[in-house]
Structure formats: C-alpha cells, structure tokens
Amino acid sequence: MKKLICLILTVLIATMYTACTDDNNGKIKISIGFWPEASQTSDINMYNEWKASFEADNPEYEIVAEPYTYSPETVAAKGNQGLLPTVFQTYFTEPETLIREGYIRKITDQLDELGWTDKMDDSMRQTLTKDGDIYGVPRDGYGMGLFINLQILYDMGEIDKNPDGSYKIYDDSNNPLYPTTLQEVTALCEKVSESYDDVYGILILAANKTGGWQLCNLAWNFGAKDLQIKGADGKWTANLNDPGMVKALEWIQDLANNGYCYPGASFNYNDFPQKIGTNRVLMAFAGNDYLSQPITGYNFSKDNFAFVPMPTGDGTSHYALFGGTPYVFAENASDEQVMGALKFLHYIGRSPVIDEISLSAMKKGFDVAEKKGMPILPTIKAWKNADYLETAEKLENDYINVNYTYMKDFFDTIHTMRRAESPNYCQEMYGILDDSIQNVLSNPSTANPSSLLATANNSFQSRYLSKINK
Image (cartoon, rainbow, N blue to C red; front, side, top):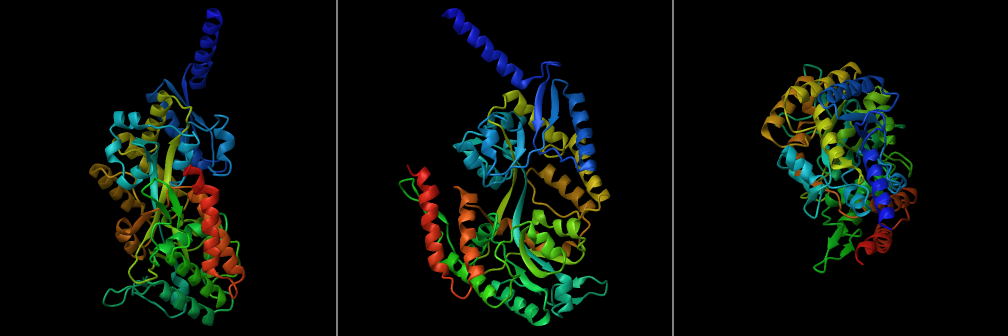
C-alpha cells in the first residue's frame, strides 16, 4: 500500500511539473489567450518581437500563442477541462462568476511582490477583488457615451463650422450644441425623421445582451437606483422594474412609436459600426473603447464624429456605465506561470512600471496602429501612479489623431459620472432585459413596459439570484 501511495504521488508530481514545463526544453510555458488572430499580421509581428525580448531576458519561460476570444457561453467548456490559457481577457462583469465556478485564480501575492497592487485604479481593483483577494489585472476601462455623426448634424443645420473647417459644437458662450438630455435626443430624432427618408435618429440595440446593457445606463439616468439590492440578511433581490427602468423603456417605446429609431428589434453591438459607418443613423450609445470600429470597418471619417457624455433623463441623474477589460489567470496556472504572465504584461506596455522596456512597447503599439491607419483615441487608464499617468498621457497625446474637442467633455466627466455594472449574473441580467426591449420595439403601440419589466424581474430573481441566496 505504501509503495502504491508513493507511486501515485510520484505520478501526480510529474503531471503537475509537465503542466508547467515542456518535456523537450524544461521551460515554464505561458499560454497567451489575447494573442492576435492569424489575420492580424502586423499585430502578430509586434507580439513576436515582444515574445523574443521577454524570453531573452527571462530564459526560464516560453511564451505560447493561444488566441482565445472569451464568451460567457463557451468558457465552461474550456474551464471544466482545465484548458483555459494561462492568461486571457474577459469583461469586468465576469470575475464574480469565473471565481464562483473555479475557472480563475487569485494573484494577490504576485501583485504585492511586484508592487503593483496600490498602483491599480481603485474602482477597477475593487471590481477584480473578492474576499480581500485580487483576481485580475485591468487592461483598460471604458465608459458609455453618445456617438454623434457631426456631418449629418451639420447638414441638418443644427451646427455650423469654424473658420478652420472643424465643426462648432459649442455656442459663443461655450454651451454645448449637442444633446445633454434624452428629451433633446428625442427632439433631434424627430428632426432627422423630418429631414430624411432613409436616415434615422438613433440605433437602439436589443440582442446579444447589448440591449439590456445599454438600458441599464438609461435607467440610471432616469433616476433608477441599484438594480440588484443586497438585504441586511445578505440575500439579493432583483429590482429590474424600478420606476427609472420603466421610464427608460417607455422612452425607447416612444422612439419606436414615432419611427425615430432605426427599424428592427434584433440589433447588437456589431451593428453599431455598420449603421453609423454607412451614415444610416445620427446617434448611438457606445463605449469609448469601440469608437474606432465604424472608421476601420466602414471608412467613416475620423473627423466627423463627436463622443459626448450620456444625456440625463430626469434632469438630475448623470451616470455613465463603466466597464472594461481585465486580464485574468486560469485556476490551474502555477505561481511561476502567473508571475511570468504578469512580467510579460510589462513587456507589452500593460504594467504600471515605466522604464525602457514598457516605454518601448507602448511606442511600438502606437506606431503599429498608426501604420494601419487606425484612429488613435484617448483611453481610460488602468493605473493611477503619477509617473505612469504622466508618461502614458504625454505619449498618447503625441499620437492622438482625432479632434479631441469633440470628446473632451466625455473624458473630463467620466470619472465623476462612472457607475459600475451590477455584481451578480450581470450578462444573464442583460439577456433577460433584451427580451423586454425586443417586445417594445416589435410592438410599440401595445407593449406595456411596466408589465414586461415585472416579468423580467421575476425571471431574473428565480433563475439567477435564487442561486446565491441559498
């Protein structure tokens, strides 16, 4: 029996070792899930340069390309088999679920050892923290705002141009000429309807969880409070039929009833670039991390759009849904693999440390984007230490190739307006809300927003929140 136990232990140890190393060269393998796809030739060349530099300085490691696009629907297939990459990207809504399902691991000790913990943006760190431990590193953040086609706005006579040919989006008293309330959005949509036969005021999303995602932000700006409420007993209650949420859905219903929004009840986030990029809609809600898509995908002019703060619905509520992309680490990754992956983030310019390595990588990223003809826009930074912010912002300003005036108000206000997404089963919640929006868009004259949201609320409570209330 003792011999059998010893044999089993030997096999287990050998298995654990080979999981971290290659049988042929004895190196610690780090699989990179955010490696560019095969079609992204210039990006792959850039990553190969970073890989070569990292491996030369850290010969105990081997970087392995393993492109993986995260999806809430498919992550279980890899997670349950222990096949997730060492490090991969997800959404800020996902760590709670990934932790609960045992797919990702904590990295607190490694962050502390590197001295990165206190340099992380406070809000992003909180999102990635569970029971005092940190489970990821933020890549960047995004805030939701309103995308406006300035060419259409100008053609309608709503704005003029400055002597230099740029659009004038403020009056002589520096008051914005873009909509700051959802009622003003509706009024603009009406003018578009009167001016064009084949152009619409706004695109409303309603599929692939993007409708519910945007509806939540609209609800907050109509005065909605928390959409998931934690009681004194620690149990969670759904609040998807909050009066502010009802008002938000009624606002969408009014748009649909009057033919102000692009017709259809099945649009998702991938439809945003196409409808905006082909000048079919004046406005759309989006995250600032997605603004380049109409430009790169549909040759929309980078000089013809503004990105402004989310409009208020009740006149006093000013919120921008805040999310982002974190790097997370597979549950079966070893401490050595985690440390190597974090160090590799430094070699691609995604760490808070400013030195020759990270600065070179950051410049390389901008140079490649510039050569590809991509719009280079401001970003919401993942780190808060002064030396990082000073260097990153200065470098970014050297490369930005859009008119910053058209988005200055968004970036000036995002840190005071931003509001985190709901904590539990957020993507599933968005999916349930999609159904309510689809019903309103499909049946605008007969749909009952209050009743639809009551049904959605009961469904979310029974199907999801009940799981964590046991």
